[in-house]
Length: 409
Image (cartoon, rainbow, N blue to C red; front, top):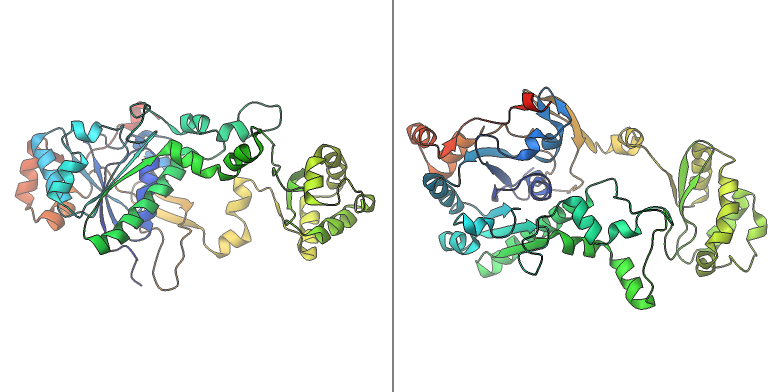
């Protein structure tokens, strides 16, 4: 089957996580993603542990299925070479500090003059405009400033960073959405455009419930642990050997009665303090101790089996080891082994996008530094081997390279 984006060419200048995550999504959908890396070391993520056979597992997992060309954009010949590639590209993706591309003489005005159909997507901490424009930002910075850490954690506790890089990954996902939207619009207008993705904006987009509640109620949302601010019980409870999550559907009061009966707490069914979802939420501090005591009497597996049979929405709180070995995950092949000739085989998350007629998913291992310089320059620009050797001799491009991990590992 054909892949949905197999006719799309992307020049990927991104590094570390937010930008590479965006291009990973598009590579899994079939786009030809060419990482443009600066010799001799390239993407700094290549030096981020843990390592397998000298290869960064971090880099491996988010750069699968891409190509790598090594071009020195600070060299006049290297910059000219990149501009020639821009003429053949559909998308340029970058996540430098705003203004960096312009300082290199590669701002959107320059690139679009060479290719009016080009889409340029820029991911940054705070966006291309505004008083924070020039400030550097990493994942935890935008999580903190975006408010998500203020509502994550246990009541009365300190701020907690979610266990995944939500700041980077969310920005990467919105960048991919923006690129796909611009590609669709180009079919009507025939023109490309610039896309401005702010990691801080993306954090606000995740907080639709908290922001709405603040403006509607005037109350600042706080940390609730695993609880939901508007539904109860809708949280994790400790069991005899772990934790289980219960999520009663809104308006399904018959489920509340059923849950109380199964927990051995029939006296709660007609208690007017708990007879509706809003009342249970208002009185959760009175309700939780009884629920916690009841849940502790049996194992997670025992509760899970009985609640499933009764149609009560629930699930165990899995460890990473649990979830990668879960029968549903294994059935859908959501974890895929990918083999690199040097790094060996690593098991990584497969693309969650499944289509009925089009092929999607990981296309192959990540590239070695500059591994595709020759093939891309030949296929995109028609350069000869001699031309490429000349460019390499002059320091404009490279056909190999990579970090010396012996200094780090």
